[in-house]
Image (cartoon, rainbow, N blue to C red; front, side, top):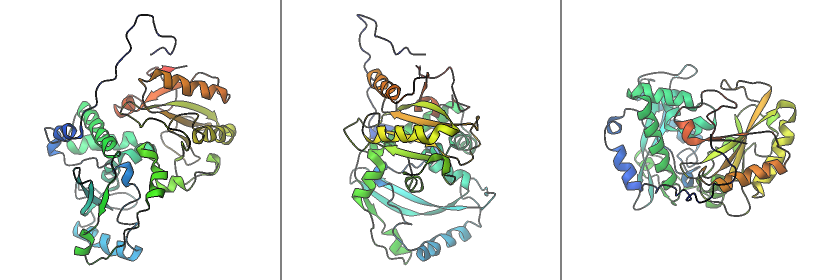
Length: 345
């Protein structure tokens, strides 16, 4: 466990490792065992969130597009052959990315079971508390070892991080081949305001509850708050969060204080709080967890600064700090304090 105390004298400062380029990451994905993967992760860049088929066509047109996809696949998953329990398949948009021209191009639609669809959007699965479930399905479908899954997920998120630093043009010309006209409804200011530079994984449903009390929300797992004032570094592969476990009866009060501090730029990039929606991953029904994110656990000064601000808010009990790297590696199997926390102060 790392100590957040004073640095030892005469000890050279740790230099963060250089980050691989997008080209090198894509080359790694084109080599064994990843090149032959049946099931892949497709993380939409943060700067492309809310720009999809469904927001650019009417409900009637969307139904006209997706229903033939289900019928063609005989209502079974086109990747694993499985079916969901509540509904057999879901419609997934296939996107191709031109990293030179910065074009996000729609290539078609495919029928996927809910489990495979969850893997495609594993970032959202983690936000919704189903990350471990998605990871296990990815491992089983591709026949990979646990360490191969970990490596693949890390590369996929590294690609996402780099692509989220770019502005993309949306190409929906495929729709015209299906006899569907469309109007580009992208709203740059709204999108940028919601995605916060790619640091937050909140989807539109969760954004709708941004001003609600967590104790009263039951249709999404998390409510998010993002920084609105001041500059803060973009998240790296080494991002992490302080975990605050709050009794149910105090969650609304504590969250209100953290939300305000996050938006005022006193903490990190974003924060989130667990709502009252039942979650199978929760181990203590009498507590809610609040996550306060920092961009990089290697930046000890920033991690300590955020912890200091939390003390100023009255959160003085010791807190664990959890890295996303360890989460993706499957090291955290339960919710709560663990001895594999990067920091504990």
